[in-house]
Length: 209
Image (cartoon, rainbow, N blue to C red; front, top):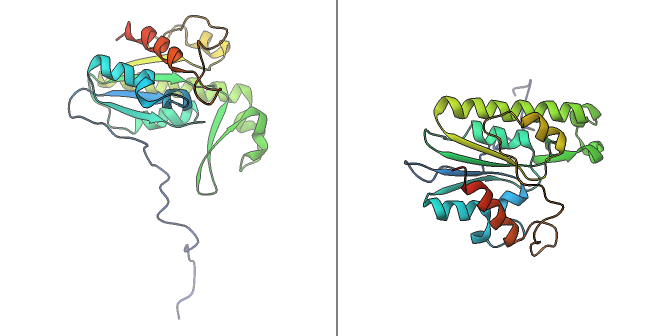
């Protein structure tokens, strides 16, 4: 009978590096990146700003979106996806004070107000300055990557704070949206933006593509 170290308690089938979508064409591809708003919570699939862009540009579209996700999660999805020259990436920035970790067999997104849910229990992972640092690193890494491969990157704020907007104001890939007190309308859940607001996002983004 053999004895010694065993790692049977680890699930070798766990996919820590799963990509939520893949490119849809060998030719030019549109990529939509972000959290629940970019994902289209509260509206029909064909009402999402990303789908409106895809229809207008007549391009296949891939969705690197996940409700509740962080900026660093989105950056990782971009950097490990099959991005190619002339692709168009539209990244709707979520709040920078979200952190990503692995917990209980799945990705866990945590915020500054619920840091105790972190597996580490450490405030450091979600401290405001650390979150800003991580977010800015991630965005600039993606911008550098897109510049090198010849893909067009459009970054715009959806629920980002004024602070990160100021930090990004000189980035060539960053485009500041007009100031709004609230969404034009709300979706079926009464929380996320509705079809009119997605149309406004589309109108804003289309001029830069």
